[in-house]
Amino acid sequence: MWKTVRLTLPAQKRRTVAQGKLLILGDEEIDARHKRILERGPKFCLQPDVSPVDLLAMSRNIARHVPEDEKSRFLTEATDVIAARKCEQRPQYRLKPVCDYLVDNQLRLLVSDKEGFFVVVPNGIFSEKASAAIAKSFKPRLKQSHHLTGRRLLHGLMITI
Picture 1 (tube, rainbow, N blue to C red):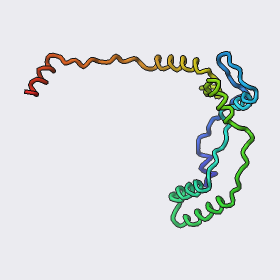
Picture 2 (picture 1 turned 60 degrees about the horizontal axis):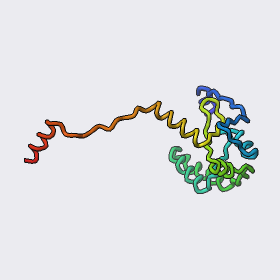
Picture 3 (picture 1 turned 90 degrees about the horizontal axis):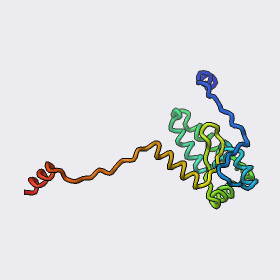
Picture 4 (picture 1 turned 30 degrees about the horizontal axis):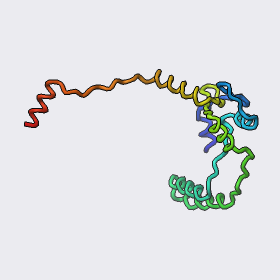
């Protein structure tokens, strides 16, 4: 069934991002070991570790959409798969030191809009660019004074009398 349905779905165009590209704005130097990890780009990420309890809860949520006659079999098989699941070994890349390095050196990590690689920006440049973008996109609104006009003042006085 899925093979026939998948053929009718529109194909998604995949953009290829050149791995190894990292743009550093300003005159900042980044440690080589952190740079190696950042050059992998935003597509390189660690898969979140989902606990067996959460997996079981997800299987029960999915079971709500399964027809009644197949629901018990679905739950049994899902439970068996979760019980037999082995914990995957995590890669040796540690992201916390990279995050700490960026915070300690007052750097921001952004994703490039069109190219899809990381951009490292010092906080000062980031604040300038953010302020310029906000000023360009939003118009300042002057605070309107709420002084009572003559008609409002008379109306207010008539109510109090």
